[in-house]
Image (cartoon, rainbow, N blue to C red):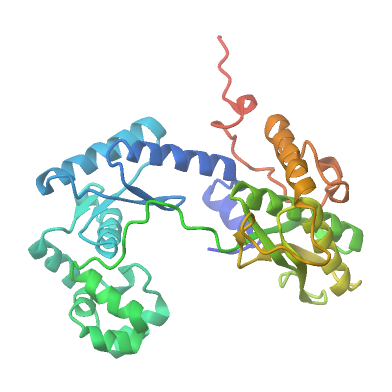
Length: 373
């Protein structure tokens, strides 16, 4: 995991591994379709990630939950082609643990129910700690120091001892494993706290103008994301670095923070700021492999403070950005762009998707074609 493709290219060829470029449009659309199927089985759902969701089954009789889970798996597979596993438990942590068991034990046929206390105790006693949601190598070592070996050992810890060794997160973990819910179902998506747009270059960049074109493009994407949620930012961080795999080349990793007098999501302002950050820390003589823009502490733009001096004209910016977004939605992304980001055909640095699978569900022109013999 995480190895550069060029390092394992021969292995992939020898083992017959199929290699694809990222296809985020397809992933996001298929995730939405799967969750629409889930909503037919439960009205209360938390979309935890692109491939995981929590469903509230409290209104379903305990004896019917496994049957419902199997029906749901069958519906998802039939309507989307996506195989799934279902874990059922009285808490989120136990549901996640049940899901891990359902994936790893073929005899469970993709569904594991840990709501029964006796059956749960049997599973927890023979399940290693690293199967617990959120328990990585560092936490595992701390739990081993407390005398734990299995999930059952973690469940039986004194909550005060767990809090002392693992903070309140550890104490909450103990209660969740005992079937006492400490984590609510979050049916409303949390307000975004930060945003990042980062990309690796398809070829190394060693010119300032090319780097500025890249950050201008990423700033435009950042602006789109912020406007979609009505958020703004009064600062951003631009970073770029070389690749450790370019042996013999000088190495450099650098970043610059750009601040604005007030919060904004205007592509023109974000782009200008990002390019100024690049100019501030740029040095010739390096071959850069990746660039990105990160911003944190996002705020609701309409309720954010206004600057007394050097503020932005939001009355002009708002309609202009709405027109920009409307054009790109209607005629396709980057139909209208900021001049500093250049036309797509001129972006030789941009990430290549030469091995991307077709975006069947969101691009009419990429639908499979059937021809009569």
